[in-house]
Amino acid sequence: MIKRATGFYDTFDRREKGTRATHYCPGCGHGIIHKLIAEAMAELGIQDRTVFVSPVGCAAFCFYYFDCGHIAGPHGRASALATGISRVLPDRVVISYQGDGDLGAIGFNNAFQAANRGDHFACFFVNNSLYAMTGGQMAPTTMLGQRTTTTPFGRDASKEGYPLLVCELLDRLQAPVYIERVSVADTKRINKARKAVRKALEIQKDGKGYAFVEFLSPCPTNWRMDPVAAARYTIEEMERTFPLGCFRDRSEQEAPSPNPVPQATIAELFGEGEGGEVAKVDPSFGERGFKFSGFGGQGVLSLGLVMARAAGHAGRFVSWLPSYGPEQRGGYASCSVVISGKEVGSPTVDRPDVLVAMSQPAAERYAGTVLPGGTVLYEASLPCPKVEEGVRLLAFPAMRIAAENGTPKAANTALLGAMSALGLHGLPEERVLEALDDSFSSKPHLVERNRKVYRAACDWARDNL
Ligand code: SF4
Image (cartoon, rainbow, N blue to C red; front, side, top):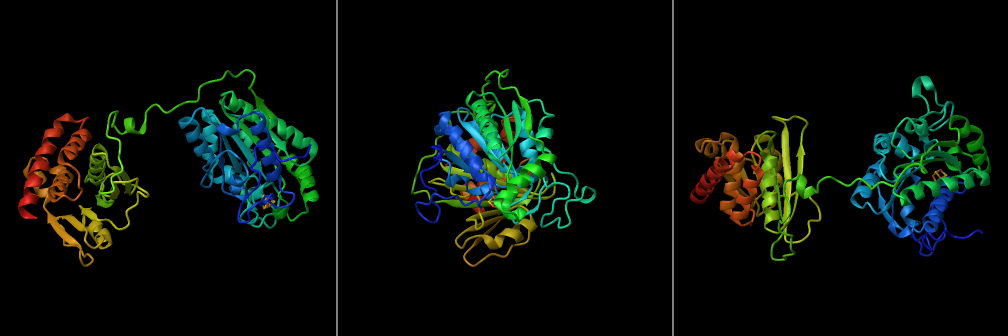
């Protein structure tokens, strides 16, 4: 019976409401593969717990069609997303749908490592032997002799290497439960492909592990053929390089296994543990953006992190976003912190309310970005940076205060003290001290030394700024 698979939406609304057509070209294999997945999803009764990860490429608009959960991945990252989703939501059925440019090129490592870990998702790999969406350039799967826009004389192994045989490579790994290459070039092949899709999703339904199905799929548009000739080319040419068949099926032997879940929550990884404040919406606490910057090794990232932790302890919404060069010491380092009385929309801070600068390049780079009404708190041994009108400039001898109080490396803690004394972060002091102590929980001998620097800095800032 020819009918719409119930795994699809009733209409495929894009710009025009009520459309029932897909955005794919006539004769394209994507539509057929979509239908096989939508059918299997509905028939297996997993639609309401399926999360579909779409790729970049011609299939980027999958979310217009499948009536299930959906996430659109960046180029090549669908497998990585599928891993994350399957671990955080272990009861879901996760599908990663990727083309040959997406999976075979930029995303190959992600896909390969996911297969090697035996992550619990079904990966549907659509091989049409070139980059289709961008106009038919050579992909890793382009066949020897095949003409594309970037191999106009045909792919030459001596220059462009050999076509990547993904199923054969994955078949060298131990973890995958199921690997099969199918084709959607004619009815007989589509029926085999239907069984492969169903098997891959059954493996997910039963929680048995990683399943991979490669589809040889016509791309009439970039092959410059009509749909009939493209289907014939898929059979006669593609199958010579990419032989069809089941490489592995351990679905019967494999026992269901629980999806691996993370060993620690984010809070535990960052040492926050349980029992912290839950952020509450507080419209009276306006959003503030901070930038902490300096050289690597000066502790600017830690300074931002302590403040972010203090905000968390105080029940504020907060984000902390580090940025640094490749050098461990002496390179450029900065972090952005947003503290807010409502959910933080973006962790980036292009125009900070407060800049804390510990090096001259950092001060020169960011001082001009501080918002009028804002503050630049900079190490006093540096030259005075240039700022916009209405920005307050405060030179603070952080390095001297830290040294005079016995811990020269704690200039960052001194700056934290100055911020508290000046009320720059709007957080209760006991929360800041709590966060400061937390940050030295693995080096308890430094707790009191940093508290001493902090208190001295507070006193100096109150008296002098
Ligand atoms: S360009 Fe090729 S892969 Fe893309 S929609 Fe058209 S036929 Fe399908």
